[in-house]
Length: 223
Image 1: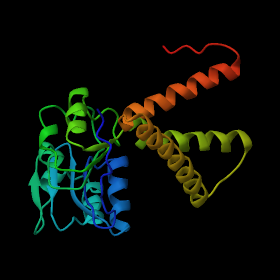
Image 2 (image 1 turned 90 degrees about the vertical axis):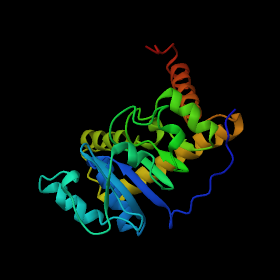
Image 3 (image 1 turned 30 degrees about the vertical axis):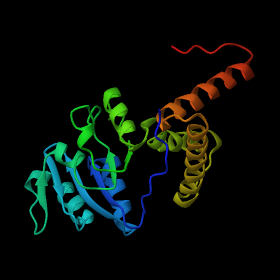
Image 4 (image 1 turned 180 degrees about the vertical axis):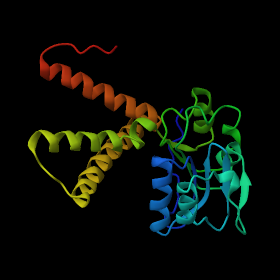
């Protein structure tokens, strides 16, 4: 049974942990920082950093851009943690934005986050998913939460074939509208059917594929 009771996290005061400081994780961490939100932990392949009061993300990104790794980063009040330590650190929101299978049955029981937003592909194992669900930790699945890149690629395709040029603000507004619509549809279905957000996302996707097949007047191959 899916425990779909509302999870209360105040975005303005949430402590956020981001695994991975590449294009996705690094950008996400900087956006949170610029919005005045507290990023308490980040990591790269060498390990992570943790500060309960919040990290200086611009300074860390500058350090990385100069060819350094986080195991070499030293500043007052910041401690070094392993990637597993980041996954299980004290935070409200955990964003795995690195490799697959980072949240497993070995660490899912120790995760302290209330929300997990999958920015990597497949960061949570099937076994871990069940543990997180049983603990009431809400997982925003990769198929939904990291779809923005594909959406923007579609925008680029449209601009190319129609010789259009959209400014960044226009792209962001359209992206926000599409992503919010997708989330609201998935969330509503998860509540209606009492299933996880991941299962609801799969259900929405299959329904769209089936509808497309009917509109085309023939079956669509699923594999």
